[in-house]
Amino acid sequence: MTVMRDTVVKSLAKITVQADENGLIPEYEVLVNLLPVSLLNTFTERLLTAAPPEKKTEIEAGFVRAAYECGYHTGCGIITSEIFSEVVLPMVTEGEKDILRGAYAAFTAWGWAKSGIVQLKDGEKMIIRAFDYYDSESGSGGMSGFMLRGLSQAFFDLAYAEPYPDGMDTYVCVQTKGLEVGDPYGEFLVTKK
Amino acid sequence: MALRLDYSHDNETHRNYLNGQPVVMHSHHYLALLTKLVEDQDGINAAEILRDSVEDTMRAVFEDYIEKNGITSAQDRCNVGREYYSAFGLGKMIITGDENGGEVRLVRSHLDEGWVKKWGVHSKPINHFTCGYVAAMFAAAFKKPSKSYVVTEAASIAVGDSEGKFIVKAS
Image (cartoon, rainbow over all chains, first blue to last red; front, side, top):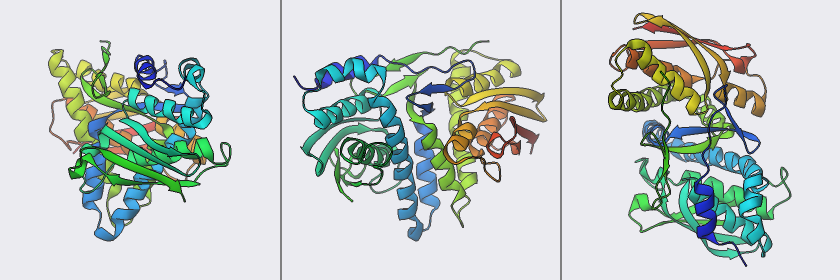
């Protein structure tokens, strides 16, 4: 058996994160927030629109970095969580490949990106396709799948680089296609840095 | 008044909703790094862009709930924002004031506590996000247009204070 994506998506989509009496959501070894998509996309669009051309790349890298560090630290909490152990790990027969398949099912279930792996070469390369991702709607001009870029790099680091927390920045992810630029899907390529 | 929390999931797009509004989960690393991105910008008023983005988008979320639930009193309208703040996992507020302004105590804070977890105590307040949020909350409570309130962060958990304090003045 390998990871059955639909089963994982269905199981994980039922999970709702709710705040405690202090208005905080401590989960997966981090503090979680649950923010309106409109806020994140509006901020991205306005900041990139206000930036002079020579600063746009730096700001885009900042958005990717935020997603990357969020993904790397939260990702470690996710793949070692009780729910991941319960739902995904029993299906894992191909090591890191299956962990990554489970991770993309989790990204889908939790609304980050309806996405999956289309090509994976152990420790070398991964291609992801996404058919819905919220930051494609930021209207910032150009490709704007910053969240999935950061997450994909983070999870490839978690799977194939030095064990957490020493494997940061081993791999890099670039976006090669985007819904936001008229392509039928977003495509993301992870390779060694 | 207790905020009704209706969580739902679209099985086609797999997006998540809270009271009909699309929402997405992130961690304190994400919000701390977005704030640092703002702090690091020279020549663009990035902090103001963040405050305004939060004020405009949160106001729309509050007004949607207020309208759908027929909420009329200023206190109840203000409580929509206060309770959403906790539902979003952003922390816990205590609010005093009237339409001329007031004060918000932030007794717990996702962003400030997240910042300290990540980088330790900072040299100056960084919670531009909550400044915009409080502006939206007061404007929604008293049915004022956008940018009717100026919010200043007077104390901050991120700089080592025991709680945050936001001073609100009608502009």
